Amino acid sequence: MTPAVEAAKAFGITYELLAYEHDPRAAAFGLEAAEALGVAPESVFKTLVAKVDGRRVVGVVPVARHLDLKALAGAAGGRKAEMASPAEAERATGYVVGGISPLGQRRRLAAIVDASALTQERIHVSAGRRGLEIALAPADLVRLTGATVASIARD
Image 1: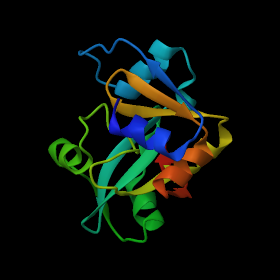
Image 2: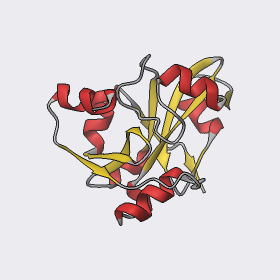
Image 3: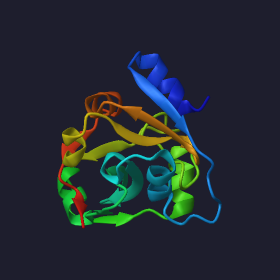
Image 4: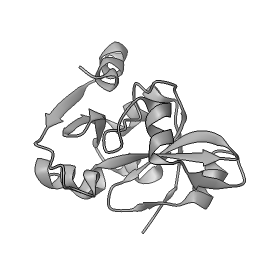
């Protein structure tokens, strides 16, 4: 049981846990999850930690796309955004890179979810460790994280 799963359970939402065998050689964790689970990449979202005007924020975007830092900064009410280092992301969230979840973080960071999530019936995000995804309704993710929804992904 991870903190992400405990958070989903505590809120009483409908979710499904999906496990797969993580390949330690995989570089693109989210694309690996989509392929291993046999789901469309546009339904699998990665959680990226950035700093907006020095404040840590998570951007939740489809795994096949990139985080638009300028759009993230604007959605978070800031001027400038930059990616956090992997070590900083791990310290802030309590999860390892490739397993960072928008749910159950050590310190709840402000979250921005890409608007494309709302076009999906359900989305998949990390459940707090590599090889474990949680599938849930996008509206539930937004509600649980207190996220802002904005167009923050680019090709």
